[in-house]
Length: 164
Image (cartoon, rainbow, N blue to C red; front, side, top):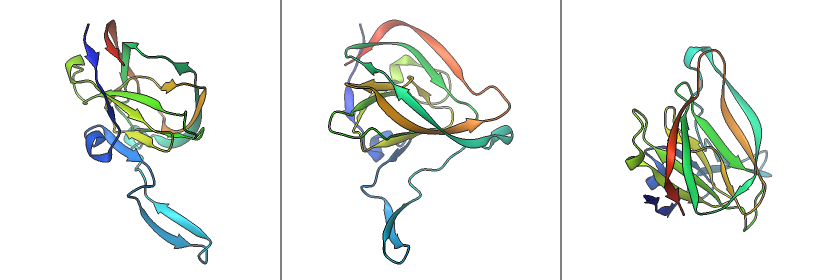
């Protein structure tokens, strides 16, 4: 049974799949007469294909446990999709499983462990597993696309791929 190795989430390792949203390494500057620090342009929404609009939602993920069979992957061909955890503590790790855009190839899947202070922004068309919260119920602000057109492709796997 093929098993995906879980690697730490870094900007460099995740770059082929989108953006890592975190404060470390971000451009920042003081605003509001020095009372606020702005961490600028942490991610870019790509949602305007076919007159789409950028929306914010909240997703509440139920905890899953490893090892986890990978049985479905999805992609959004008309827009990017960002997940920013708002339930932050030391126990709030979550997992992302991704594969490059184009024709889905399970041999190209990669798995990343994300800390509770790291968000991710899947680039348009990147294959990814639905939300995988670990350890506890976890809330995420999600920025994605709303509008006309079909924006969710899914592939079903036979469950022979496992992460963790």
